[in-house]
Image 1 (cartoon, rainbow, N blue to C red):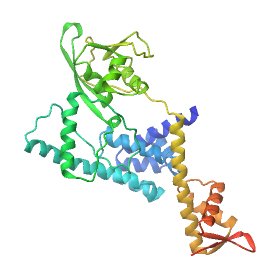
Image 2 (cartoon, rainbow, N blue to C red; image 1 turned 120 degrees about the vertical axis):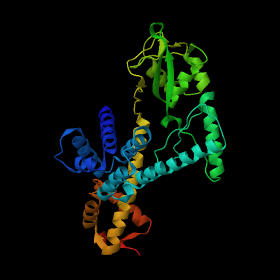
Image 3 (cartoon, rainbow, N blue to C red; image 1 turned 45 degrees about the vertical axis):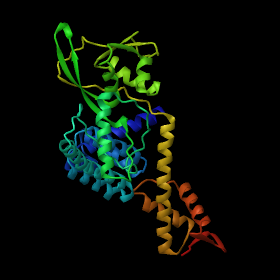
Image 4 (cartoon, one colour; image 1 turned 60 degrees about the horizontal axis):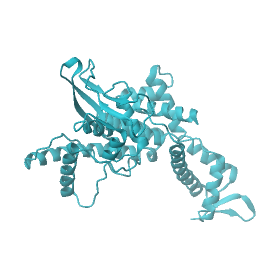
Length: 371
């Protein structure tokens, strides 16, 4: 399981690396088996895994991260990358990726309209807000939360919701705070001198930091009560601010274990050479449930692809024996993934049960197509 987790993470990083590259470089790195360097190695691993059909969820996650959290290399480059994937792997592997890029382009139009709305109505927002409106079916599934947003964020969120409700009455917004990011201006006094840093953090990290505008210190239990986040999830975000590379907060007692009574304090003495600081997150462990869910999604996608290949072959050939059908189906599917003959047999049996095929009465190994 540990090896599978490491392999999943390597593939995610390879996919993310390629999605961040200009289209021409991606094409050379991914398609050239002899390419040297990180992009070439990542590209070869990515293409091999996509061909075997088990990397689509990983690629989708990496695309999500590249589009939402990283600077874009431009819509034309992104579409060119997807076109290469489509050519190599088929349309069924790229429909969601195309939808993701379309959503990002539409979000830019919505953001421009929102800025005009704020200007025309002469609204004053305490916080600058950029919103990406995503279509549920195209993006990975994310857990909902009941996060209590600080008042600094709540005003702009409610303003955008009112604006969006005026534009459309048949859509409902569901905020995915886990994908959000923020820039928080932190004011510190190292050695008694006033100093400011622009802290690039996640939405959850920002919510934690904003609580310290009201008090210099509070217990972990207090923070959880204010934000209404699950304890295990909140621990990761608190620790990233206390024991990570940048200790913007301090924890008493020190250490990587967090108890409800632990005291979290604003670190007024914090200092760094850089004005802008990106505060990294502590990586979350991939749970067995997440691995099983990914595997189930892949198996479901493969099931439909296998059935479609069998029906195409039988519609053309009308009748075929078992071995030849398995061979032809495997040949057709090989450019998408390496099919398991046992899975092909299961799909044949299911198609017979659903009356797409039938066995020849005199020869059980011979299948006939039912129009």
